[in-house]
Length: 460
Image (cartoon, rainbow, N blue to C red):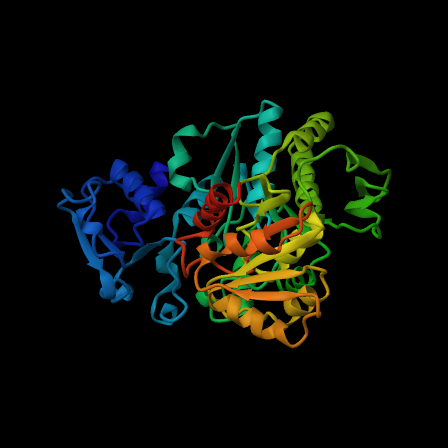
């Protein structure tokens, strides 16, 4: 990796575009190799120049605040952080100049990478794969969008290390090499504020397979029509491995009689019996489990270890996380649900949801079909927050059932009093917002933590 950094960046005019967690990680690795390479750091945060990491580096220039995106076409190498969107200015930049941690890392380590993406489920699936591999005593590193920048794990990599890489659309957008094993779980409307169109978002996701080579493997959800529509437009060199919740194919991975099965056109192999006690709830998690089991099988993991790993996996925070029972009401935190489809799956997975808290930052997602679902869901109390909540409320107001009551909050922290007054004992109160968190919170994690704090403080 260090040799590649030197080859790519030495004698180039280099811009670090974005100086959050990943940008700082890039800076640290570059300075290990090229301590006197002139660098420019661009970030909307004007205080970056005061960071201890860079304030004494005399080879660094800064473009901060409103000028952070100016003059990008003057650099021969741009290391773009995932949080920076170029949708409105990319036409003036040479695409060959744009790279990233993910791009460089895959160009060096793609043969050891199992990459997982999808609008929803990628964190759960990647973590489950890592959990199973560790249970099998395999050398596995979990990294990427889940919180560990790629460059931060370089010193942990051995020739036998499996690199389980959770990949967002932003990380995949400018890559030139795909992982050896790639997983695509689903394609839903999300991050529309960062792309010129929903199609551009889908194409960024498809990069996880687009640049595979012969002998690589692509595992994809055959039930997702958007994925099926995209595949024929790409010349894929990897081996295709479809998986489905439904029986109906003699090849691939599928479910019949509550068993996850695999067939290559011959005898069927049982990967996992879904009647075993598992902690992951919902049909969407069956797909995540199937994808993880399929990948671990590909990596040569013993079937008994795969089954043990699935059964022992506890899930992740903010993903259908059980908060507790207070005054007879069961509280669940599903703050990760930032799109309607995720909220719908959560409601179906739990059942008996009497109160649903939803809304937040409005990114222009179409909520008309979601409103129809809520109207027919049997949920009696719908609590809305933020501009997205206002729009969902507007969509459902005319079609709600007589027994449904709608509440609009002026701020998120107002929900406990309403919930305690209207929710039936023995039922579920669910936070599953179907919207981003950026209006009141920095991210979905902060929203979920605040929900749990208020539940435990106000409702016990």
